[in-house]
Length: 421
Image 1 (spheres, one colour):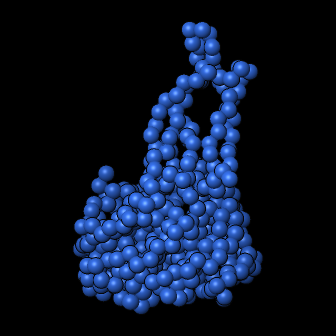
Image 2 (cartoon, rainbow, N blue to C red):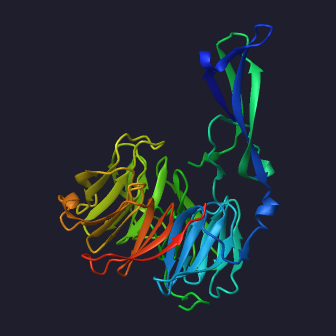
């Protein structure tokens, strides 16, 4: 049975108008959902010639290829055998795609409520080989201002909104009016050669990833739960169970038989000694904020982004001592401007500080990180990074950047694929 969420508004003078009959009226904006039917969604997979990147999201690296999510549209495939001259190879059209992960020759991608398995063993003949339907929660995309109109999940997935202005009388008490939105368990939106990908091993995602692989399992998070898929047969994932973690979990990072989960309320640590049944170890709590995490050795590095819907006021980098994994402890925090993703490689720390750019530090001493900044690229808007073998992949609003950091005294820009608005 569908539930209804009641929206109750207090009228203010600025919202009230009087008609010619002196009746109090209110004018407001309604976002009425526009839908793609489920049948259209499940026949929309397509492989197209390369397209310009317009709204870059998550990044993933496998062998000599970079896979870049075009937010809710699909995946760009980039041949990166020469990082100084990356080549845009093709575009995989996947409506509703946000996250991806790769095991061997199989790419896993969300498509709104479905999980797709895509064979990329031959990049000249990319194929959808499996689709698990209705395994992810129904998502309500973001909208700007106003209220949400009625949602009918039977019509399909929401792909946008028709915006309209409505004027209506205030109810008889002259102070309050009521509106209702249909609700049904849905979440507000608020992871070789030029022709092939090596068949062994897993790829590497960034710190903002909501998908990750460990052993024979794919882990995928929604707003509150960790979903487990058995990928022992990589071409035929099998959903096994979900584990409730906490409200507003956001990112996944596997490390040393453990899974570090970033949430707006803190960092959760789970044991992966039995990959089929992750077990809670401990939690580190912090002020409510958006929270990706990466780990190296005895330290976890967390960025907290304030001044947004995540709730925090201040933005900062936190260094957490996890030498006692059952009792994580904050060592030091450093102010940041607007941080998103981050990466760590052999005590070199990379922080994407939003519109304040990419910052690179020597993190050998966790107490003096800010005193050992190696580089600061201010003129870019940085979102997430993957450090791979002395080459840094960085995605942001301006596109994909690659840097050679083999010589920390002379970090070099190798290439830049531009985002086209």
